[in-house]
Image (cartoon, rainbow, N blue to C red; front, side, top):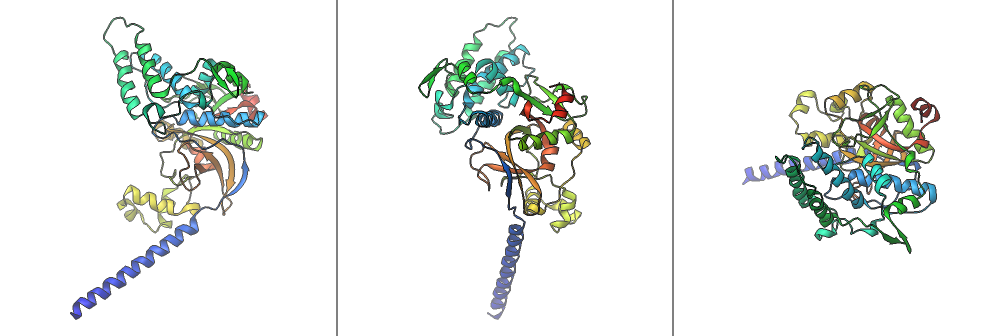
Length: 403
């Protein structure tokens, strides 16, 4: 009996110590949690949710154009992502068939897709088409069934063994697009006035030729244009190539002048947290701060490592990004173009470090209800390219680019 009591007492002491350790860890994590002060914030439209669809490129770019309209006219619009997707997937399928399947057909895309569709086909408000997901009885976009039907259809046409194919596959594919996304209207009424998609695009007050793409890599000469070689840039849209420091100066200058940025880049790294932060972790320096020597660090699971890094919050050490780091990451597939978002402001944490305020399209998710705070180091290292109003570029850089 005495032995049992001793064991029970030891267990209680161990539990108490464990609880104390957990409280200390929680207190430490809370002390590291960012407290943001907004430096500059520009108008954006409401947070959207792309849900189970690979359409971040459409949501982020239309959000950017909605802010451009707000800046220019003061009017708020909700532009239709599914109009863009319907037109874009047909055009991507046509290219895939022309290339006999040697061009990737997928859900992803780029800001160039949105701009090109608007220039040639126009745009409509969200209310002119069925809301995302409603064609399948869902409340939000869900492309799981849609693409499991569409991908093999396109693949079957593109890799057909016939010497000649008919054009009948196009109305068949259009039927799939319309069934899942809704039919794009030829004409609609908005606020009591009739429009076509082209006349509606013209009515929004923007010059669609004002928008240019910016990137920064060394495998092409600076101050020239080239098509960034990633699969989702299937239109081979051209980007102006500038040094990394000038790329960052363009973003900062744009925000100073009241402009926002449609950003495309890599969010697959450990530093892009699901809580709403983007930090360019210096893992080696972080090991000691988390109480983990190299041997112990190697034994941790990926989730354990990520949890320890995230717990450092504003005190997480960051790498200093370089032009060479960007190029190496691009060439070895570490720097990818897996997400599009909308940069609309600048903030600083309690240590004075500056972060870009970035609108995501995952609904009001994370600690900041749909906004992500990404450090300047993270953006410098992880940007693939971005779309911007050419008037938001500093004059000296515009002169170098000839725009």
